Image (cartoon, rainbow, N blue to C red):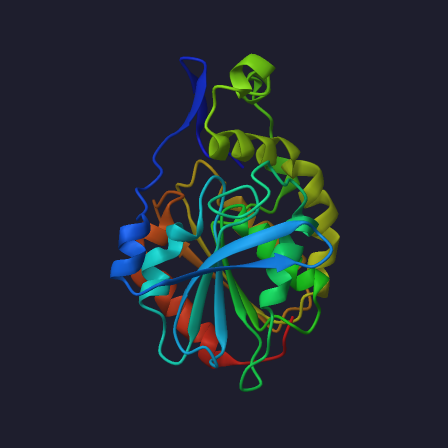
Length: 275
């Protein structure tokens, strides 16, 4: 998986990342910003939310780099009868620590406190890019507490993970100190990702909920082959659907919102066993 992190003037810069709203936009859209401490971990997670506080939840998890504001429009306009939440993963946005947290299990532990059942329904988790394996890890580590998974261009196949020389250069002390925190943390997550995916892969067969995968065939950051890899490992899922977007790149949460909203609506209404 690669987020097009390149070395330029001794600084890594991310290419093609969409502009995300700031605090004024949160206020305009009526979003609520809050945070919670994760017991026994030292993690503090910041999140934005909107919707009935007693309704079933949909939880959005961003990739790398990124923040909760990557899903600002989805949260500001949640599906009817749903509380929508988007988190800043540890290492990004307003969550703590500010250093990179490369363990998928630790990232999953940061989201676990949000897993509550309402009206007999467990939360549906939506993960983009590296957020994909994070939400799958949440489901694997919390059996029976996740109502379904929506994976958007998720990175799952350790066989296609490669570390570029430029990424190693980005870890040199002099250069690392010049790189913005979010990009430095993203680079460290990607360098550590292959063994994390290798540990996650055998646990995917234990997931029993419905899973929808949305992926573009022209994705050069996370190859489209990841969709087939994931489906092949979800051997006990109640249902697996791949929504293929021909000729589409990695940034589908922003370029194909109607498709994603439709996939999410189907997951919400389909029901089925929890993960």
